[in-house]
Length: 122
Length: 106
Image (tube, rainbow over all chains, first blue to last red; front, side):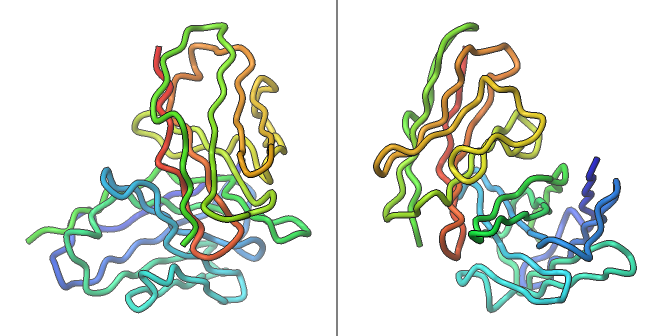
């Protein structure tokens, strides 16, 4: 069974960079599929942040694009998220997930990590 | 961005009830619609993808459909473990967006 696990600091200071890693296990490898980051905050709800393909190609949410860096390390079966210049508005539970697609390019998130709370505060 | 609007925002029901949750997109999204279930303190779980396809391992009491511009998630006979929050999500265009959620309560 596919398992994803987020890791990273739970507290980040304003203006600094939020860094998270997602380790993939359970038989799945990052050499296929798209690998996605999402977040959830009480006010804004569920928000798609962006995704990275095993080739390294990225697709970002335009509202966050200028502050995002996503990457994948196929040798370690993990992928990463960096959000620069964070503010309190970036406080949320962050999830990593696997994206799957069909022949019509419809896609969905079929496996999720448990989520990790990141608080932005001095 | 495509806005996804779910109705109702909350719903009270009983075990054994048939329940329907509706999701409407601010523009046409064809069948690019997924449904997720989220229990408190847990990650969302995929139930339905591409509007009507049941995710592997999900009980058959869950179903999804498209009628005109409205997408519907139906639970045919509620079980106690179904009391949770349900979200729709469009994958028609970037950025992918979610509905605000429907909380299903006893």
